[in-house]
Amino acid sequence: MAARRASERRRARGDERSVRQRILAAAFAAFMKHGYAETSTREIAARAHVSKRELYALVGNKRRMLAACIDERAQRLTAPAGLPEPRDRESLAQGLAAFGVRLLSEIGDPVVIAVFRLAIAEAVRAPEVAQILDSAARRITRAALTEIMTKARSSGLLGGDPVQMTEQFDGLLRGDLTLGLLLRVIDRPSAGEIARRARDATAAFLNLYPEPEGTKPRTPLARKRSAAGSSAPPFRDRS
Image 1 (cartoon, rainbow, N blue to C red):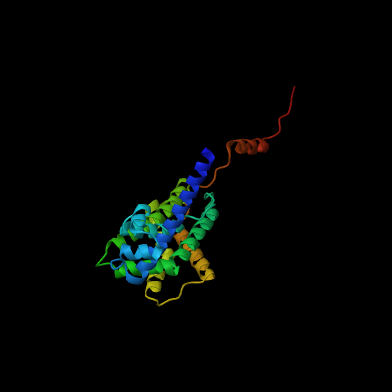
Image 2 (cartoon, rainbow, N blue to C red):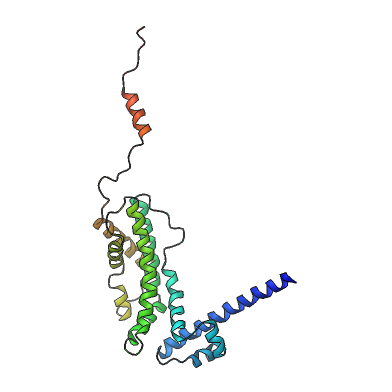
């Protein structure tokens, strides 16, 4: 009996997640079509085929729906899974380039660009759109990149301030890409172009922040003693 109830609860939670995803998809589609200010919760409920009561119970008001839509996309802007700890400058370069590829791939996504355009279009009537976008997407991206910079500094691979280095690398990486995509004056970069841009940004960044002096790996003490012992004249028993 208890197992059956547990199974029913799991199924109910799964159903709730499915309905919630349907609500968020409907909300995002409505925001893109009509704008945030002109979209009503009634229309979102109708698109999602749920009641307004269910809509509020599972997601919340319109602002929470927008925040959930943006946060869901922003979660993709974290560091790639399995990124190795930076042990040397080469592994640091690989990690930064991998992060750059992921970030550029996401910000070039048409859906992401559409969200930015929505924030710009609603800047006067609904400034909360830009506020949510800034606090969600930028926060997650900067936090992930700052963590990489902090670890690299702790390992003696970089010598600058992690926050400042994050800003510098992000600027080198993005350049005018976001603006060009927003204005539709450039096309979405290909995978090859993204990889090249990430490599170039990484190389430029590491040139700006060379490895601090005095951080070269030291020879272990035991090895030094061994080397010193091998160079000493052989002992002769004179007795």
